[in-house]
Length: 406
Image 1 (spheres, rainbow, N blue to C red):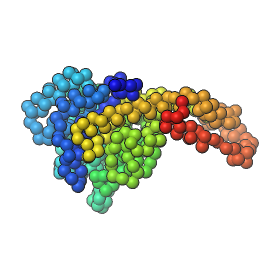
Image 2 (cartoon, rainbow, N blue to C red):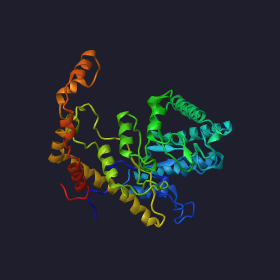
Image 3 (cartoon, rainbow, N blue to C red):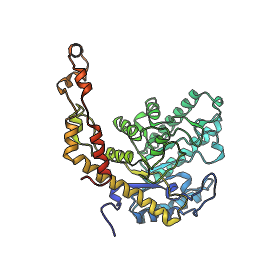
Image 4 (cartoon, rainbow, N blue to C red):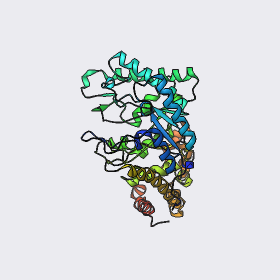
């Protein structure tokens, strides 16, 4: 039995090997599911309707494998991808699991550790490109501190900049068609992480030698761990032209990094996020507020799920989890399209902008505009007394989310 919400490869949904391959281990208990072979995971994802699979270097090629072992593993994996019609849109490097990275990789105080991290990442980039990846993600899992006096944080910023600049140079020297995406997180596994939010990453990118090659990979859970609106962070990245990849999951504020099934927590933020990514927001929203030049187009990158099934699940439960992530996204996309097509929503947003005659004065400074603004008479009391109707709008959105409107 299928319906319109069943995923297909055209939806461009992807999962990491580490997500559906998560064995249910946590800091307080052993695994509840067996470790799965990567090729098995690819076959099962394809059967679920997924389009792509992503990986860390060590997810596919175990740490310490010989060159011959590596080539055999990769050849088998590539054959499975072809057989299942799957792609690898993104790859990354595990710079957090081995004890050598216990005090960071690119920001470590030990130059030998930093050198090893560079070399491991270059090998990971080679692997990703060989498998067809177009985006390479950097998550600084150990780039942080518990004992803040261990290093000047300005040194950490410089070391991270040196690393990304160097690796951009490597990609350009090899002639790879590859972009980098930086992933922020406020804490865990370190007490405090460097570059804790998407905003921190966006500013850091502006300081890089090859900033045109580097964007961000925001994650729902990470931004929620910081108590921030994920939708606003993603919107800022889109506006800056820097949303190169995205990690979808769910998270309760105030908890550890949960990586829950997409949409299983904070359904309103999930709805607004899907609405943003799908570009369904009514054009009238822009025209009514004088922002007609804002890009409301659809995000065309992968919809990647960086989440994992509850520890309570067996393997069958893992595939229910994977299908659930994709179905929830598609259901929310359909609800968002209906919401933004509703004449009540369009009328509300189109009528939200009052005093549009002053719009020409609000962009592109010149002395005449400044003088006109200073001479402008605004009835602040009348405007201050005007109700905006956001309660009605929010309730209408809620009814669309609950399926009783539209």
